[in-house]
Image 1 (cartoon, rainbow, N blue to C red):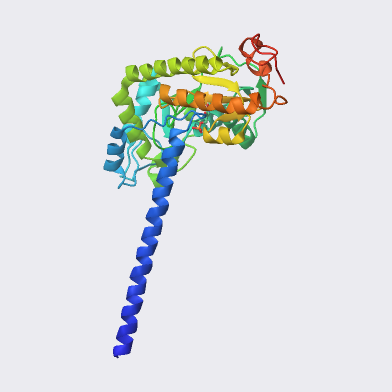
Image 2: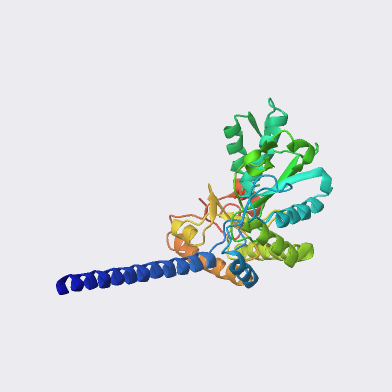
Length: 354
Ligand SMILES: Cc1ncc(COP(=O)(O)O)c(C=O)c1O
């Protein structure tokens, strides 16, 4: 009996030690992951995400993270699931409808899981209204438009330029980008008269449904609602103005150190020569296409970050181009225009080019 009791104690001690070792492993892993996210956030420049999540959002998160908040079905119709944030969802939709000059009774919409879902929704409404219609998209359109065309098997024609001579049917915007929601989400607004082609009664939900997904993230409307109220239209406009100023600052400093760069009017995306070294691209998380790279100057892209980035780029370029006479500064006149290109051919001060 004594031996059996001893064995049991040993087993218990072993189980406790194993659980403690597991807990220590998990917290070490999570601490490492947190540190990684800190570092990656500090060095992010290439994608249109606002990584500036202030303390107020953490406090908001802390209040609601214990609830499984889900919105189901039509945001304007009560459903049987009670742990939802539909009133805030509708308040956010009203804000955007007002912004885009739509009367309350003329619009329908919902908070999506991302901008792509909004595009999928708008194009689905279009296809239901015009089963034989053609999607005309700019060659510069986001890839989600071409994905939707493939998914819905709708003919898609790429046009160099698309103009809105015709009335707009719907608008989709991402919520985790400029507004700075800590999880992917978006807003889609469409004309109410158009959405009826999709809307169906769902008895199981005790609601109607015209959305793409099923369960919707109920935390997203809380963050969006809070952010819109905290910043207001004026606060957001101020942030936009600051981003535009910082984008000019980045453009100016890139040119100052001899990097070909351009910035379109009213844009916060600076386009410049693709850095030679993929490790550099990776370190700063730059979005690259062919010979060019982008920095999207969002509210978290500060003057300090820009200065440190340009300094890092200038130091690296000195290694890439000056030390090795056989490696020439690339010409990107085709991408950004001769007037913005500082390669040997187009920059009067320099004599070398690829
Ligand atoms: C015009 C446009 N549509 C759709 C998207 C996709 O948005 P999301 O990443 O939120 O799905 C983007 C992303 O940048 C975009 O710029």
